[in-house]
Amino acid sequence: MEMKYATHLGKCEQPCPPATSKAKSDLAFRFTSATPSAADFVPVGIMRPRAEDSCSSFGLSFFTTLAFARDRYRALGKKGANIAARVGSHIAKVSISLADGVATPPSSSGHFDFHEAATATLERSVIDVVLAPVTGSPR
Amino acid sequence: MTGLPAFGLPLAVSALRWVRSIEEFDGPILTEYADDKGGVYLEKWCAQDATSGVVRSLRVATRHRAIAEYMAGRTSLRTLLTQPNQNAGFLVDVDRAGTIVAGFLVDIQQLPSEYLPDDDAMHDDSLRPRTGTIREMFLLDGNWDGGTIARLERRYIDVAAFAHCTRPLVVGQPPQYKFSSGWAYGSAFATMRARMPRALKPKSATVEANSPGVLAIDAPAATAEMVLDALRRAKKADAITAYDTLHDWTKLRYEVAETKLELQRAEKDLRALCAQLDVEVTSVWIAEEERPHHSILTAGKLVAAYYRRLWEVLTPAGAEFVRPEFASPPAAPDSVLVAEDEDEDLRW
Image (cartoon, rainbow over all chains, first blue to last red):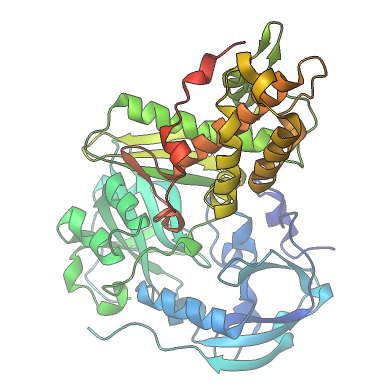
């Protein structure tokens, strides 16, 4: 499968995408703006390159369930990381197909990195968008 | 961005060397930096300007010990950012090219609330990177000495090397601990350490020689994950039971092995513990026809010694392994606590 950002992936220290990654056809959830566009599906390693970027920087963060995505959003909100400005204020439900790329095995918190195929246009595969949970506690 | 105009930053804050990402999600959240004089700094992501892409972060001076206590779940992120530096820090604005475009000396407590973590925001190990080099840490109590550090480092590397050399997927060579006059399972650990590829070997990173202090060991992500997997397996009840059963006879002396060791039972026990620990039996057991009791006793002693080393990493004397998932391990088997590995250089 020809990968998007192949030049960047080839520069990673470890094989990228990792050998454990697999194509999948499934619903997945990602933080986005209220009206997801292609700009919501650009990996952080491309948006904001750093010398210490690793393979994960060139993958898109997804969650296996809406509940996992909401949990992570709340947890990030507690860090004072201005989460809405950073990753968006909504959670998009995306229908991923086998041809879209490969996913790393999900972690215990339901997160996985998705490395896109060169032809992927995930913004067109968004089938629903919901508001992310309110974060932070009053001080 | 709003705020005071930019002014010159102290060298120590403007020219820092990236050390590691402590927490990240689609980019850095909390990052460790160092200066060339041994100073330790943290950078916490605060905000991003939507138009210019400039990122504003909080940089504070800290200590290894404070970071380790945060990652052990003992202190909150807010405490980590404020206590070691009496609320003093710098806000720095960095553009997309990585250049600092503005900096402000700040009283952290006066920052906008959205820049700061909630009071109860603690370390989240699932935000810790799983690639590159992983820094594992041990909190040292007030009574540590050089021996404590040497032993901790040695045990971590022993466990990593053993796990690497005995994984079912990589085993392709017979055990390397046989020599002309017999076997020495103690030397098997040295052999395994030597056989571990350099690119996978853990190594000491820093020792903060305060009292209490902290020891940091850097391990490639694959090695760190392998050790964590071994530790998770070791603390399971089935592994504890399998070890206790094996330990019943691995404490036998070679001189009495032929009369007191039942081979079938020994093989069954050895395979049971190896299965629990994901150790390939053929990587530790040379099935010698001439002296079968001795060979299986050696293999049993070797796996038992590995198991005890796992517990030494899990619950080290005078120290604490900094991983929240191991913060409250189950009680160690009694035989782990009392068994002495004086057999390092045992010959028969």
